[in-house]
Amino acid sequence: MKNSSLVRATLVSAGLVFSGAAFANTAVVSSNITEAEVLKAQKVWGEAVVQISKDFEAGGLDKAKKTTKAALDKTYAYDMGPVLFKPTLAAIPQNIRSTEEGALSYYVGGNKKFPNDSGFALKGWRSVESKNSVIHLNGNTALTMGNVSFTDKNGKVTTVDKTWGYVKDSAGNVKIVLHHSSLPYTN
Image 1 (cartoon, rainbow, N blue to C red):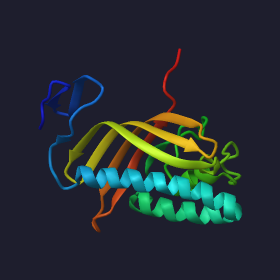
Image 2: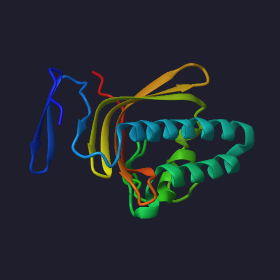
Image 3: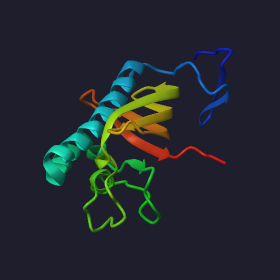
Image 4: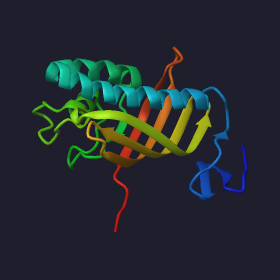
């Protein structure tokens, strides 16, 4: 485990407690999943969001749904069970999307079971950049917390707070099992 002047990590019975500055070194408890794999998974997820937007503009909702379904299968672990997904712009009582159907609706809308979904990934995104404040690796799992900035086709940037949990499956694929997103606090 690393200890730097930026942050102190202390192992406790339930996990790690972080204190100090906002940006820390990566805490490595085990190396089954690597930092490079986590960064690649974040990049693939961001590229998928951009591709969904472009496919929607070029081929409509059906093409965007097909792209989204493929992206969900590749990036999320719904094939392993429920995923802890709390999207940024999802209202109670449907603010948690533990099923692939709920996630698909959040990204592209069009599902009567989720009438408030307008399709987050259909908003003309052109780039997605993840900036991690901390990455925690432990065996075949990883946790990250930081910000993700989305730039639309008009150059407008939207930044959200993001927490992700990843698992490496038996085939060696790194997939999302936890995805919490929220808008930063402003006063």
